[in-house]
Image (cartoon, rainbow, N blue to C red):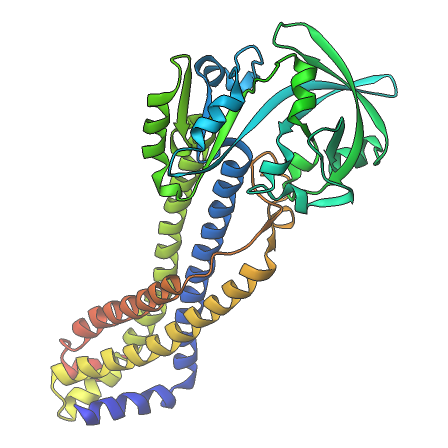
Length: 409
């Protein structure tokens, strides 16, 4: 069989055009498989991380009725004596820490005009342990726990011509369904990197917002962060066993308001990825089939010269194998290299998608998820598709009568 392998290499260099087209088809198919998979991995990894950091934590504790009406942010349903519950939660072995939050719909009065937006109340020191907002300050400084300061998104500040040191007046509903008014000083302006947040979010210390909404020492929700995210469902059960009846704990996977959309989108992208693989397969298959069928006369000549049908078949599969290895190796490695580079520098999703995804928790810059497993998969994919679909037409061609094959044009 060594002479057939040598002949296979000679045939590859004999028809450079055919060789170039075949390698190019396999190259682009495997390259795009790596890039698409890496992009989807980075996109949804970033989205899930953002949702956990901004909305759900690994486990969330809240009043049962609050979770039922969470979209409307009902302030009247809140966790009383939150600090006591937080201390109990932090004694659990799997819990890293727990932090309180309040989300309040507020009205902002600027130049005698009212604008509605969202106010997020946080514990500034605890948020530093998992939320990167303190690293996103572009003007001014981060919050302090005992201040009446407030931070605003850069898009929000630009829209309303706000600046650090300026005082703004907020009107908010309270737990008693009344209206409360409070003045805050803008201490910082942040660019979070999520367009929808940068254009509408304001962040303040939880103590000052508790005063604003008349919640006392309570909080709307408690986010629990774990040492191991895989333990979230087990911790949910453990926390529910210790909570008063009116409260409940939900692991991030079970918070339907946020993750139904992600589950549906993931399924859609899996289907898109499947069809993308089919498309990549078609590119390879089409090129390989043309390459084999246009050589029907050559097959007849080889058979007439005394090569057995098995040897001819082996020759064509060998050629396809050599070309697929070259194309798949170059394509998968190039895709892996570009993915690795883009995992460091990122892709601007605003430039890519425009405003179509601005309301989702998708970062303005997505960093691709470069994995060696993806590179290996793309290489094997390109190789196997090429071999299989080179074998089928070659197997049919070697069955053709040599005289008929020699007469083929």
